[in-house]
Length: 334
Image 1 (cartoon, rainbow, N blue to C red):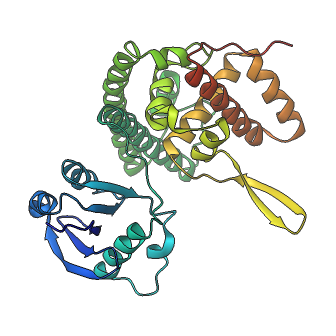
Image 2 (image 1 turned 180 degrees about the horizontal axis):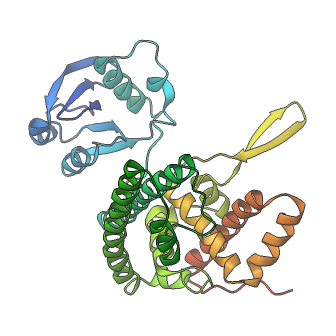
Image 3 (image 1 turned 135 degrees about the horizontal axis):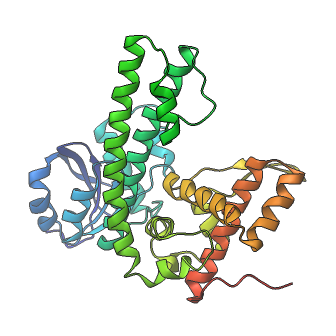
């Protein structure tokens, strides 16, 4: 084990990692490929080291193994663009660059939530994936009806709509495509219901979730999803930083003294952003006066899309203050 701090970059892949071990002067001491099975022994051998790995779809088990033994940092790949934009990309170069950035204290760190929040994220994100899958089958049915010239006035997914659809004269292949899609929709709906039940169980035991549920129009599934995606609220120093994290802040282009605001940045968690827009729809539908007045005013001046996104941002700002203060929803008077 080295007496000086070592800086290690790990370029992680499925089943192996390319490692680069660097000393404080920038000299590469070791560069090789490491199998996943060897990661724990490697971490023990370098227990005084600092390690940087990039956030990816396969990072978690490597991160958890390293975290038991070394000081590990999860790198935000979008903010650490040196690697992503390099003209020459190899595993060795990427690992070496991670080690160098770590040594130079130039790492843009990604947040790693505690294990309980990670489990919640897995739950709400898988639910969202199932909903997306169901939507694809619904769109397949709509497309088949449109292509066959069978426009329907009512939704084909309501009970009445299904009865109307069953009475249509359709090509046998179109009928088969629609029926198989409905079978998948029904299976997915049943599966989503099991996730909903698990999420509601979490809601009954979580004080932060129950705070958010005091907003008329925000239910348990919405509240659990939002808190899971936000993680620990203490890591945000202001409501503006949380809005930016959610990607609901407008993009800004500046030229000289002129500043132009564009569409929202869409950075960060797409699941959080999607759920906040659902919350915006719900608070308006449930006639929550604080948000309805804001939505209606923007809808008259701009359009429904702009009003909906701005309302989602306003809902999130309210949630921030509720969570940081531990207070129920209380809109300002006057």
